[in-house]
Length: 129
Image (cartoon, one colour):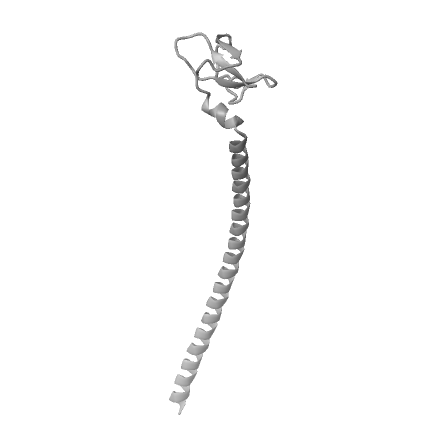
């Protein structure tokens, strides 16, 4: 059976937080992180006294939601790894492409030079005749 942490002092009716007796904290970690400043104004009860449950506590204790969140986390990590692999392959491909372009440029320069030499040679041959 769940226990709830409720604020009993003060005008504002707050939500009920799900209390984990073993860790002495709320499911949303509000107690341990200092979000609750005056801890003497709270009590642990078996019922919510008609108050709504803290959305974060509800979210953290829902097993279906937790499994979905864990799966999304695994999927996100898998996607990050795949993106990293693809970026690495892309970098490698880009490097090879750049090397090919440089080689083609050198080849084109060589062919252009050979054509220029042929033109010059044929010019002088025609002048010599």
